[in-house]
Length: 354
Image (cartoon, rainbow, N blue to C red):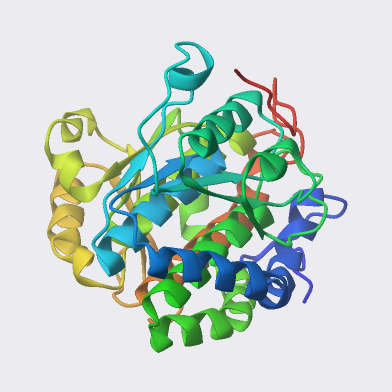
């Protein structure tokens, strides 16, 4: 699949951008990932079934932290197990070991090289947790610190802004949840995902181009399976397009942040395809009345600013397709805002923190 430059609207692949090439690779990555994940997923799930945890602790930074938000949604909704995000400085700065015996510690990282994640994973393992790492580099320090390694299998990713590794991370989490729960419909949705991602790449989100080109700030809204996607979209607007953006759940937004709404404020709404969508239409109508420029990603409707999506399939997999369409849109937005999608200012591909 190749995304072609189209000045009249539609998907765009600017020549020479590494991010565009990696976006094209995502469907094949998802297809190939199943083979590499089969054995380690079986081993991990066998342990979790034999001794079910009462809590799951995630540990991640950046885009991987948004994948961890996706994990929270998947595990809490489908398994009823609370999911909490670790604060790595508890281990690295305060040297406090958490009581995690027999609990699941799930680290997510593209490079697996950030010192704080590695030290936190080592502390969790020493505390008796079942430690698993979703990583792209399976020979990384983080992979070595954990008992079980779940490969993203995304191959090299050279663009600073992570795209295919985020897609690979959330797909690995979908596969983990499907295996853990035995939900056939979720597993089948993973099998359909490569083709749907290819279709999602080509959707025309040009209605969002003018509102975001001259904007100084933007809001991104999601809920349920799309909250993690909203957070990832807000980060990518900052990274690739130098546009300040903040993400909120649709419910959280009404509890204060809605006061930010002013005339012409762009609000990107990433509509979920499950029960979490309740109230989205009313929120969009309220925002339009307040003067916001509402950009609604939805499979139906003809309101101004509608961004097309694929017809609903499985809600969690649908959310993954949304971020693929958004990434493709960024390839059009960044050039008109004068930024380089592959080399955001002040950022490096691997960030080392402690």
